[in-house]
Amino acid sequence: MFKDVFWRQWRHGLIFLIGVKPIPDPPSSNTVPWFGADHTLPAYRFVPGLHPHPTRSPQGHSFGQPSPAAHPPWTPEQWLVLQSYLRGVDLFNRWYFWEAHEAWEPLWRAQPADSEPARFIQGLIGVAAALLKLHMREATAAHTLWRAALDRLNAFRGTVWMGLDVDRFLDDLERYLAPLATGSVQLLSPETPSLRLVR
Image 1 (cartoon, helix red, strand yellow):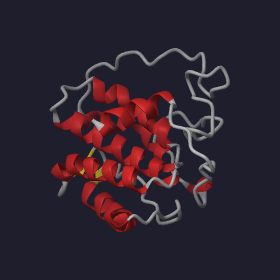
Image 2 (cartoon, helix red, strand yellow):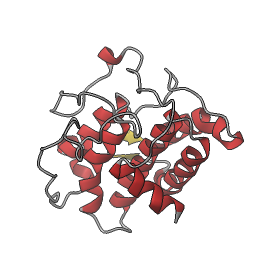
Image 3 (cartoon, one colour):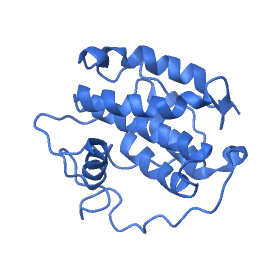
Image 4 (tube, rainbow, N blue to C red):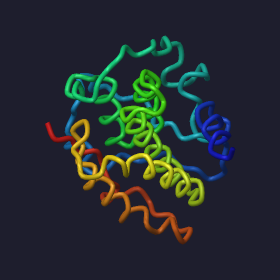
């Protein structure tokens, strides 16, 4: 129940916090590789309680843009040309965590809920949500979201799935997010894991 409520609140920008700060640029952001064709970036990294909701507020960075159409059927083998996937990766690696979720969601919805592709994409969405909550200094929520994402992504260990070395990514995340287990919250930093795709 908590997770469902959080997701609704997060998507609709209903969570407001005192003292929340903008997400900074990642270190050496100008050297982060691009994987997708779209190299534009939103005007800001949405943080609930700090910025206008991107699509619902007239001041939002994506207000007035058409809602994404239902994504056509896709397979994991198409990842090199799957622009919604690559767009989400590019946004995630630049710490646009909410925006990465939005890029990936049509891919998730285009698959049967219990399919491997859906679980993989939902796992990535969960990691993005966890890192956003980490930035918002909400250790319990970040830890809950991270453990749920890990449950989904563990099934892909030992593989390179859609260009991602899953073992390396999850091991990096485990080390980085370990302090959450004791309620500690670290800042986004050069140690924040990224999605390093192998073409």
